[in-house]
Length: 209
Picture 1: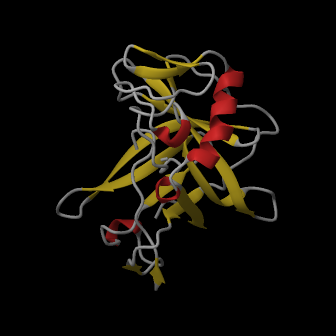
Picture 2: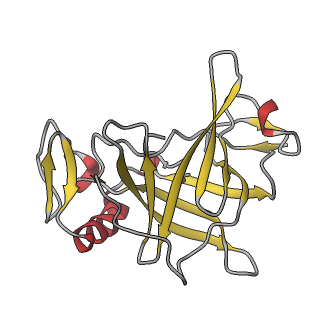
Picture 3: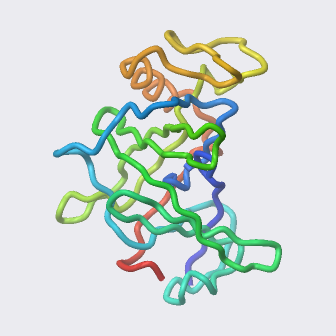
C-alpha cells in the first residue's frame, strides 16, 4: 500500500503534470499556434501508467487497476505523443480524457499541451524538471508547474501587478512575444511558483491499467 495521491488537473487539466500538472489558463501563458514540434534528442517520458504524489494521505493498492483506485489517487497514462487522464465523478467512476503533447528540450524542459477543448483551440505550457530517469534515460519521476504570466503567478488576465518581460495580455489570455520569452518565463516560474502548486509525479508501470 502506498500513501500519496492528489494533484489537480493541469493545463486545463500540469497539469501530467503532466499533464497532470496544476495549470490554469487564467494565469499561465498560452498560444494559438504551437511553439514546439517533436524533435530528435528531446527528453522522453517513459510510457505507461503514472500517478501523482502528495503529502495528503491516500491509501491505494497500486497493483490494482487504476479504475478501482480511490478518488484521492491521481493517475494518468503517458504515450509517445498523448496523455490520458483518469478523472472521477462524484460516484468515483473513472472517465478517461486525452490530450496530445510535445516535450521540448531546454533548461527547464517545456511541456506543450494541445487543449482542443478551448474555444478556439489553444496550446498551454508547463515547465518540467526530472527527478529520476531509468537506465535508458527516460524520465520516470518529475516535478512541474505552469509557465506563469508573472512573478508569483499573481498576474492574470484581470489584474496585472507584474508580467514577465515580453509577456502581454491579449483577449484575456497571457501570451509570449517569442519562444525565447516563453523559455525565460518558464525558468522564472520555477522560483516563483507556490510550492503547494508544483506537481510531483512518477512512473508506476507499463501499460494503461
